[in-house]
Image (tube, rainbow, N blue to C red; front, side, top):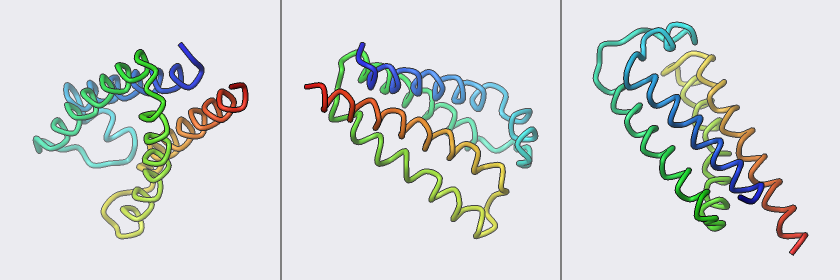
Length: 121
């Protein structure tokens, strides 16, 4: 597995774990991050979607789908921007930005790995 694929694979594992927490027991994590607990089904729907997305990431990593890797870099870098807007609009509290920073850091890792492999080729 290439370094870029490894970064996408590990991010996929992160998504699966986060998704499973939101799907099975969301409130302890929500409270830990300063977000209100909920009984709404939507947080579990998000958990299911994150789990599925994580599986897609792992499949793409195993298949060395470089075009997917490039696409994820751009989208993951946009996550903290959206989360900042959510916070500034008062739709969420500041701890949400922590999740956006994880996305951005993982995107930079993937981008760096992709650049190194392109230079080596």
